[in-house]
View 1 (cartoon, rainbow, N blue to C red):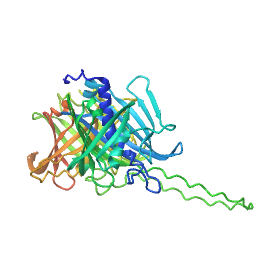
View 2 (view 1 turned 180 degrees about the horizontal axis):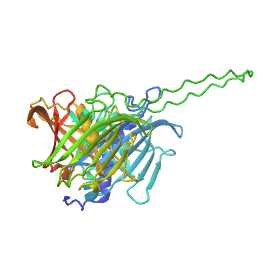
View 3 (view 1 turned 120 degrees about the horizontal axis):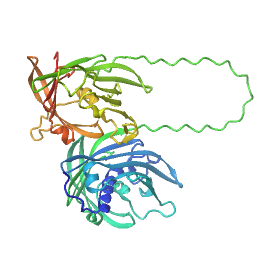
Length: 503
């Protein structure tokens, strides 16, 4: 059941999430490529193409919104040097149901000289026909920062100062004061940060209290974490993924040359033939498994045999003109009375052979799970996932499927914490399951000994929290071998268990 949050004003909630967007999007005003002199209020250089993804949690509810931004380009607009920044904010489940559905694209062109917005374009996608609004400050410069440019000013000032903003035509004053340094661990890595406490009448009107922004120490000043409270609960916005997309290099303008006296053309030389693609090349040695690996598992529930399951790194071929690795998990045997799965049921994934991030994932079932039959296509550039024909789902770049995660986690550094003061050393990864992305939390345990087929084998337990209450009540566990290759020895889901036949 959702908490009773319906008495919150829709306008306030929209502005609240606009504030969340500000904290995430604004850094990119300084992440564009500066003019050659290096001038600009930030005094630092950042690269066009850097993309950040964030996970948003509300109280105990995880992944309640998707946030992603990218510095698209830098150039000239109305004679002014500007940065183009694009961003997307979309709410899910509890926030959409209890507060308000938000699905907005925003593009900002910000002045490289002042950091003030030159134009702002917003597209509201939460209605049947998208609504687009544009604000232009080409004729008359903006009198203050909007929410997208506010953090740019904060960063330029070293995380402290007083700033004037004009959001939705209403002037406000914002005060920023530095707080204590913190070491923060996120799905994107560990960061040394300095916190800044943000306050002002604007946030008071939104019922936002204790707003703190943690920026990474160093030249990039990544917004690693934002936390704030409302009368209805606490929000946490955490960096989940950092990616740098190399922008295309402009072609040099040729210098005009006088026309030369025509000469007979030379006999054309044959161009070298491109090297043909060779399928089934060996995988990188850094991966924990090799091409052709086959793993057989025995399926049971409460001691009763259900059948057999086969995992295979089957082939490396071209898929949609991209080098890809086919991973398959297939039900190869079904015992009498088993109605959960059927013979031939499978999970498959076409993945990048180096990163194991999927291009396509497929689920086929003839048993009780047949309603979940699905094919999902992953866009490696935008992170968007097409599922169920025309259904487009926003997801962090690098999102895994369930099957690709099983293979990828074998190469993860899943070391238990050695710090008594911080006993948890979680790894978080975005995973698409059924209809949406979830942030899976992998919690490694200490080595232990388990018994499989009467044989005692060393293993490491990895407990998995999916953020999906229905799945999490089943208590998902994976035991990985401690030997090279890190083979999954056992999977456990509720009363169901899969044991490796030959550990």
